[in-house]
Image (tube, rainbow, N blue to C red; front, side, top):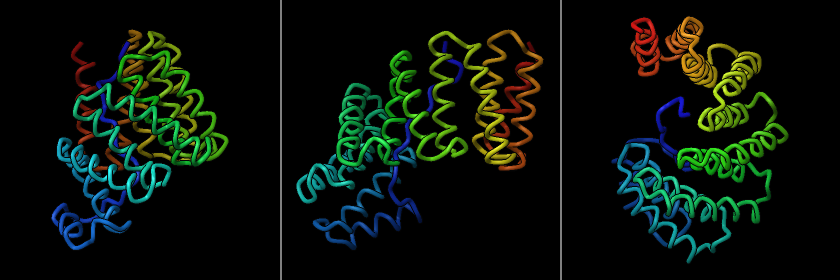
Length: 260
């Protein structure tokens, strides 16, 4: 059972600072055959992806990846990052088979080159788990989320935002596999740990509270879901203001429950 709508799989890494015009200008100002030029083009591709220009990002990522493989080698960290981001871009434009195949290959290569506990490897492993869940393969996603959450706990600590995000992913995979009650319990634990380690309000806590509310609503516990949405919305308002997109969405969702 899917509790939330399909989110985007984002790119990892890359420097995204300044306007698209400045990034495009930086690409023109640099020689494409050196690492600095490759970095500029990679950053522009990330910016295109995050700006919703996914088709353009795919074309640029493909070109950057071909050049990094040729100039830096297939095992260079910059090559691995470009490949991982190309996988995310494929998924964004709906090329799910190519995206998953590229992501699986990239996660394996990062493990081989960087080691299983390197932060970049963990990023790829988590992205693959999310992609499997979005491809409606929740059983596989569950196993991978369990693994990456355990490794992030060991490497980054139990209160790191990335660790908590992996645990949220595990809860969503459980919900997609039909075990919404377990998902709600897992999210309850994430909420408590987010408040403990990151303080309140925090974006991770807002996300976990909102998703837990959806689980509670799916279980027929509308009053509890409404209360949790209220807490999430209040935290969102403190972080992003009353007119923030997430604040408005959470308040609207609470209003929907009131009308049922």
